View 1: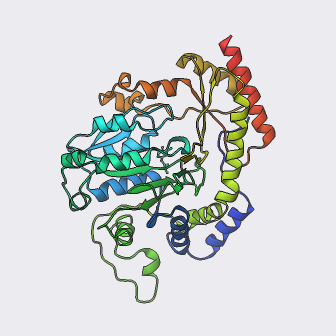
View 2: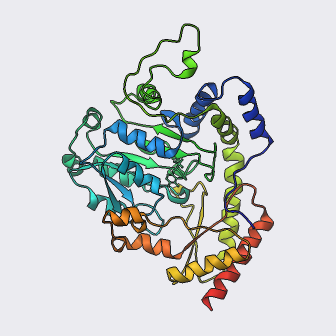
View 3: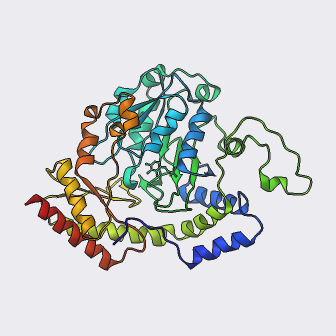
Length: 403
Ligand SMILES: *Cc1c(COP(=O)(O)O)cnc(C)c1O
């Protein structure tokens, strides 16, 4: 069976993890600090805070901005549940909007969904392809949109407009108009979950890029405390001479990253551009080249003059196919030994959100993408021979189902 996306774990990563295990310091410490610095240098954002997951990073930032009951947060209907669940945790209302052919949030739909309760927009760079950030950034700056904004907290007052909190769980290394994701809008959150392009088993990072008069390094220092129980010193500082005394400044969270996780991240980030992305792009190009011959195949766009994907998942759509026939194709592909997937089942189709009153009929673009998509395996260790097997199996399975 060809798996979907096993993590890349080689001797270099094992050595770095063992080095951490033997160092006497395994939780948040020097390696997390170094990983944060390297991520800042990589993305070009103003500061980076490592956290335990993208979910915790997104929730931390919603809480920092003071999102609460009575507020609305705009989220694409086509995403993983984390993007919306964190809004529910804060007591705010999730306002789903539809996505376009590129699987990303439709900025026109966002514009229509804005009310005087909207506090945050959470675009998702689906499959690693960056959203239309110029349009999104321009929209929140528009005077008529700003005039609607009702600040309820000091941070909201200071920003004076809707915050853009980008879910870049897929798009580390993606590029928009010459800049990396991480450096495209107010705040960007990466995921280092086991199936993501760069993994630390579990982990995430918050990239801070807030405009003046915000002081991003001061916010970083504040968030370090907020993400660790509001404890005025982290455990590493406490063990230094005379460092035992500390205070609790607020009832914070337990969202910190461990040095064991950061050790994996340090190795992966150092070779990410020159190795990981090169391999993933090679696999994307191979799929694209092979499926281009078939009239039933709708290929994903992953490079344009403005945008470059991080090549996270390859979203092949089948033309003119029903959800049921697509499901039958997936079944055949599995039976022939290849693991495929669907990214994603839109959230309004999920029991919790359906019961909360969301109606899938309002998101035809998301349904169309979902009902016709098959996500193909893309991972570092997938060999060219295996890529060929995936192509053959998918072609056979699709053609058997279509005839
Ligand atoms: C994986 C994923 C997340 C959550 O990341 P975690 O690090 O597992 O919390 C959020 N959004 C999207 C789109 C994802 O795919």
